[in-house]
Amino acid sequence: MTEHNDLVTSTQEITKEALHKLGFDDGMYELIKEPLRFLEVRVPVRMDDGTVKTFTGYRAQHNHAVGPTKGGIRFHPDVNKEEVKALSMWMTLKCGITNLPFGGGKGGIICDPRQMSNQELERLSRGYVKAISQFVGPESDIPAPDVYTNPQIMSWMMDEYSKINRSNAFAFITGKPLSLGGSQGRNRATALGAVITIEEATKRKNIDIKGSRVAIQGFGNAGSFIAKILHDMGAKIVAISESFRALHNPNGLDVDRLVELKEQHGRVTQLFDDSIPKEQLFEVDCDILVPAALSNQITEDNAHQIKAKIIAEAANGPTTPEATRILTERGVLIIPDVLASAGGVTVSYFEWVQNNQGYYWPEAEVNMKLREKMVEAFNTIYDLAEDRKMDMRLAAYVLGIKRTAEASRFRGWA
Image (cartoon, rainbow, N blue to C red; front, side):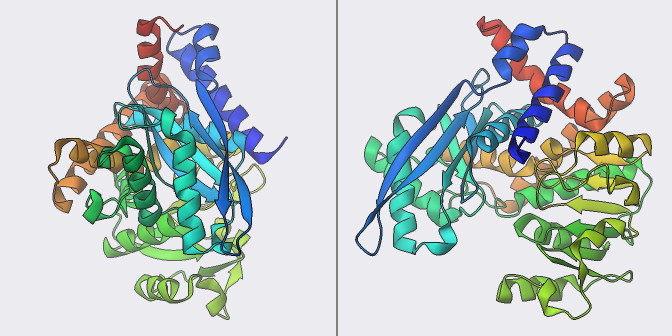
């Protein structure tokens, strides 16, 4: 079984258990276990050398019972059907957890944007929108950026959709630049949302963030922003890792310098002679561990080595079910991915609302509204887990799937 099939299967298993906890039967599970619609499209692109290359793209729309589907588009050579399906299901859960009027969506194109010119990426972006234009829109399915996509790509997609519909369709897509209807605070929303949940977790664990020791696996967009925000709050970032190596200093790393080096070189760990193997990050003595890289990183093989009291899953699916059981039994508070990484879709929702209103909020207001959403979601899930004697992940799924299941039942779908 592939890693992505594992993720789909484990997501379906927890969803089924959550639905049973809520009193729904297997008929509801059969409805929710797969996306209601899954599109596969072929996108021909004229390359710079004059040849035409055809790319495969996908769009999953998990469930629209509570409103339009919402979710990012990733450009990556490893994009596949099962991954896109799983990610659309997680988006439904994130929207349910933060009480947004959306179901989950997700998209992807099999390509390597690092090997493509700006002009080729523009033609691919516009071609993908043409291919899915009949099935997406501000009131049906709203895309956003994801892996290797950015505000420029969102701008091309918005412009293409606007041409097709002969209107300025700003609300069609989120993650846009500010000059095209983007929202203040969107670029670091995922990281800030994760930090807010960490703040709430430290209160429950009686840990003072100031002086707390944090290890972060992954120093990409989310990981580096999380490191910077926590560092500025007084935490000690004692370790960070990238694809091959890690840096560790029990007295705290110079985060400002690392962020500067990342901007200059892309990667930072290879610049230091005293780097350590990336696997050793999980053995570091710390209070808070933030997996912000790939899925299936914390397993039954390394769960016993982890010393952290709090794990905040900024990545998708970083902890296997068996590792979750081991760590929960040890009293480790795991902030599950569908909660910890829900800040991005929350501020995307704010962007959509601002686009529809034509009224834009200052960053302080965006951050305040994000904090309200994330604090309420964390405390609801934590209290549910305590009251019902379940782990945080199952509690998050119970809260995350409840609204979609209820709306589907009222509609008469199951």
